[in-house]
Length: 175
Image (cartoon, rainbow, N blue to C red; front, top):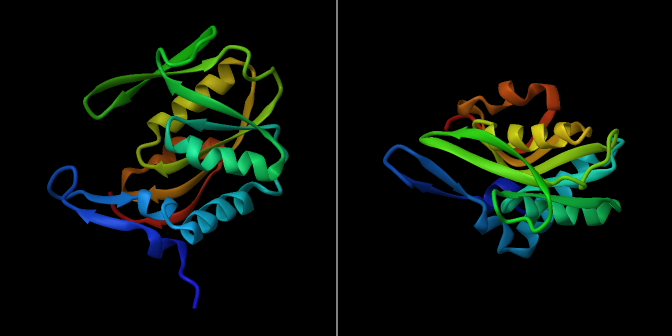
């Protein structure tokens, strides 16, 4: 009997601090069948959507976004941490639990009117995905869907991202 995607996710209790149930995505991608289930699942979430490009935030958005783009015949656009892209960029700050982070995209990565999906491994609070969406919008693109491998529903990222129609392959009820 074939395993379900959820069975490839290893949960590590009390990491990185007591009370946290860390959902480890590396156990999914190290197994060929787990990786196939995740990528095929994401492709199925977006296959019937009209879009031009896949955007993936560093770094796990690269892992899942590139094969989705490849399988659907689309281009892939990376969103990176500030200072990592070589050409002229636009940037977006977002809040972390303690402080702020900033991400960037090449200013010529998306043309006005292009439709984009954002692919990442995890929807938690939604801060990094929202920052990626704002970058797309600054360039005149339209985010038509977000697709995630996992979602931590207790952190309510879905509420924050609802206008982008987020979908997840696995939804964990807690944090």
